[in-house]
Image (cartoon, rainbow, N blue to C red):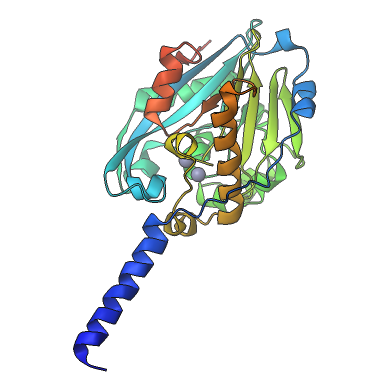
Length: 306
Ligand SMILES: [Zn+2]
Ligand SMILES: [Zn+2]
């Protein structure tokens, strides 16, 4: 073989690898995910008993490249934010979803910028005063904020991590010791689990072994799905686009499971006006989607503190 042909061969190979890893969308035509909505709504209890409002705060910011968010989405920078959410009932009870990481961890990560110390302190206060704290999944940017409260037995007893989250390697990478994890309440794994009136966890392993989607029905009947990191940006849902192969591998995901979940929620998103219930999809890292929810009043800016 001549050097010229060899060179062309290598270039073609590289182009093929680039296409497969960054560009080609491996999304399946059909999903194998199914959610028993009747079961979920029944576990949520009396429609009027749900939280009255949902507050949220941005604790940190960063950016991704387009290809990290979705297959074929290029090299343009996509802003991302790290949010905690607070479900609030009329009688003063509250549940916190996700505990954004602290400043020291933030500083050690590439592509991350502003970390808001005051917002982090408010998040810690919200967790301290919550009746329960739950995580969409056990990655550091959703779990590490619990480090600020885990030494307090009274708060620790209200942290509800199912076994799949407590046993995951990711929760250890998020900074928790074996002793700390062993001191948390023993919550068994379940396909569907009632967290509080109007709040149900739906097990959705894939992005991590302990990933779960939260169904929330506000007291006025509005329904929400907190998707965790099944997608990092609502563009995947709007365009029914998967994550690229490379980023799924780097993130250690079960890529097949996640793609099927993205297909499921993208179809649900697209079907919202065609007879499906109008869910409000909460995509924690997507500033644009969060802004739309805030502007329409589905989520309120800020956390209520005692
Ligand atoms: Zn995340
Ligand atoms: Zn994650």
